[in-house]
Length: 175
Image 1 (cartoon, rainbow, N blue to C red):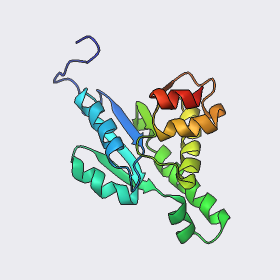
Image 2 (cartoon, rainbow, N blue to C red; image 1 turned 30 degrees about the vertical axis):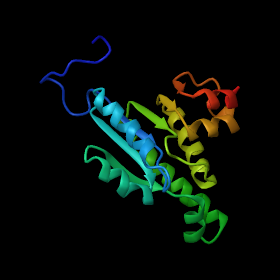
Image 3 (cartoon, rainbow, N blue to C red; image 1 turned 180 degrees about the horizontal axis):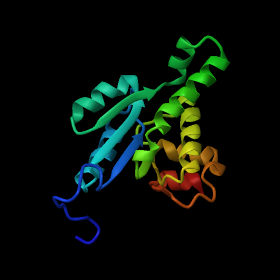
């Protein structure tokens, strides 16, 4: 009772919490859904999910309560629609800007559920983490987000508002 704020008529939509989950790929749609829905069930008012386009319809069909943004693109999609590496880098930067434009409206960013280990997504998420750190946005890093941290620990080194949530296997990889 002490950690869940009471619902009152004085509160407006979003005042009890606003989160975004960065995750959800063609193969993994359940993890970001459960992450976002768990926060809603605990009292969060608004839950966004930033995912790959192919994951958006399944995730949205699980619940109309979720705000789904199909902005993320895997490396295959990036290469298919961008002729050169310069174009791919520019597209990733555009995606990062679209995602980070919502940061002022968030209380926390969850990174990793259902993300996959695709290099295009990893590069995008690394840049999203840097943007989140620049505005001191708290991070919860789980699943494939931990894979990113395992391979690039300096990404969050010394960043106090970051919480890692490894299972036993993920913990052993991080150590």
